[in-house]
Image (cartoon, rainbow, N blue to C red; front, side):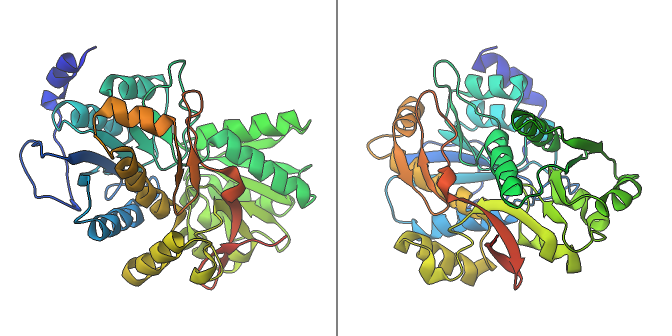
Length: 374
């Protein structure tokens, strides 16, 4: 289906747009010389099926305030998906056809299946994902760029950590089979199989999670929860001392804090720089400046917020000298970019750009994330 056909399909879809960091609301997108139109898809309302997009929105606003007089100018339009994964595909198409976006940032959990991948290809604009998706590279490179580690990369890191702690042999994987949990669960099972370990999988629902988990937690030294953690928080509070609770890249310190006493047992993967012990130890002036500014505005930053900030930095850097979508894609896929969450490196065959040496397992310490110590 071409873009003209997509436009017809989108005639029945309404947009929900909030919190524009720059520019003013308009019924249709307008072109501005030397400006880059960026649409951002976040979850800001609706059922709590995934991480809130509020920290990412705060980071986008911070970037816009800091670069209000820069060139090229980024005109950012934020769309609230309201917790609807299917709506992400519709809004992606709308951004490319009706809003004439030059790039799209997806900061909500999505099921990056064949349908979504096809929608990205049809959009014909760079699409940057701040949360984990499978490796999005195609034979020709494609238009998708992953700013977070893939589920396979995260599974490898989790299994490595469990092996180093001596708790790999009795691994339990818990999944509520949500859209974000399924690829994580599959990646963990596959990674364990590579090590000759058969992981026990428990599939739960909101109605039976406590009944299924509480007896199991008492006898399992290592538990990995796939997908957003809030589905498991109540049941996980009963984990006994000595249990290692591995949560998803999707979570943040606020989620772990809800474990109360069991928070000391939990760990999750994120950027080691954003969880630096002090702002001065963030390694680069750019990281320290981001952490200081974001903390003053909204509290300690999350890895997701840093990735959203980086997404705009990557697009602005790639747009120097012209913001044509094809040129943006070519510059992104041929470059290495130093961000605040990590350093990103892409190529035509590699679209998951997060530097894995910057990935660390984090602990809940003093109300914020800190690097875990084995």
